[in-house]
Image (cartoon, rainbow, N blue to C red):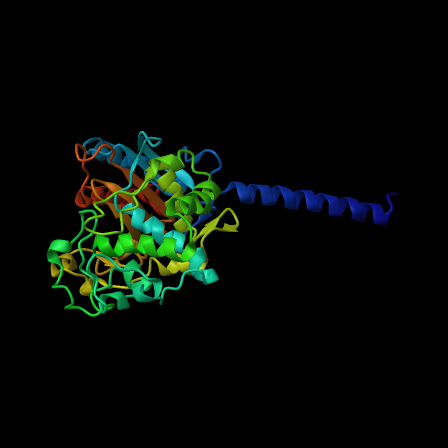
Length: 375
């Protein structure tokens, strides 16, 4: 006769083994989203990104992604990555090619601000006068603008920028708007925001880009020597801080934002700050000039934020970095998804926002959730 204690011991071992088998089976199955469709546990890339071999297992239609491919082939897109939960769902073009980001640089600067704001090195309430920041012909009243006004494009300063490419032609008369009262997308604010960053931190902006983002994110194509400031300093003493990244490194930037500043357990950007910079500081109905109120965006801290009737479904809570000629980083939290898009060699190549929106719409349409594979 087998002793009772021995039998009980074997039973416990069998039950333990059965539990381990069930656990393994559970972990091997995709989780389900709110619509019953599959979702993926968030992953983080090391040197390379994990690939989604069967889109339907991630809740996306392979046939619809083929439609996306056909559409993209008709554009001047040079690099495109669609990342779902940290895995590549779709890729097109040369994602390793490095080229300039245009105004996407501003959104990245907003990210860099975070740690220094949290530790008190950067004070958003500091005025230009307190920082000793002036420019050619800046008035004492204009110098009452704060750093926060700069990063939200609400300084009320309509001084010429060192570089073109903003809404300066639509600017009100100098001195007509009080600081903080009026939004206008203008490069003087953004360039001065770069100057304020360096003034308060004592660091070169590109050195901070390297140590605070490029290195901890494991960017594959970052070269510090590629980054230098440009602009006509006779117009303004604050140059533009242009940046040069590859599409696949842009995807890392977007994925860091999707994960609210956390990268594989390390908080590279304070979570509260990552949320703040993509929250509405200026809603759609208060954007200027009035013509842009017909669009879909409000503005945060140097990030464009979906607002109005289109901010629903796949675009609920969505936001984007936007640069001239077709440089975009878009985050769709509702789909746990990031899109990085590059149009290199401008102005010979150009993908306008409306054409890029066509990419986003096709990605959203490819999301089939629980209906994937259904007839």
